[in-house]
Image (cartoon, rainbow, N blue to C red; front, side, top):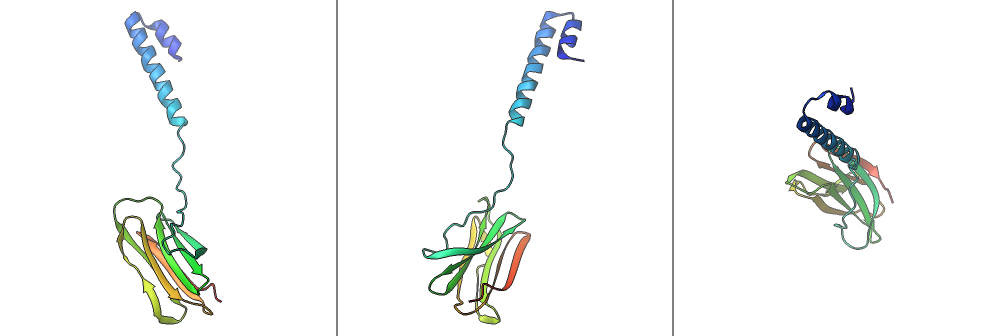
Length: 148
């Protein structure tokens, strides 16, 4: 049954006008909702926390809403930072790195953060690196990568 059929069957003019107003409002609200952009999560952008001279060489996106970035400098240092997609209340996060097989070279930054964890560094020229990070329930661990 269309809105016009309902209006025709109503005996009182005020009721017709009220129903027409509600109908128009409902149509406008539906149109406005349909026109809104989606809320898909975008991947985090590297925030430059490692400093100048560091270039992103790898990244791992976490389902929990963050990205872990591995960066490299021409001086032989690697750096890791975990960046949230959206800032807000502090939540558990971590960023860590080490030369593969050398725990004495490890660096990590666990804690509750509002936007990112890290930066953490290790000198790894001529070596492979183990690296990773976490945000809330998501984590990544990468072993023996980017050797050289």
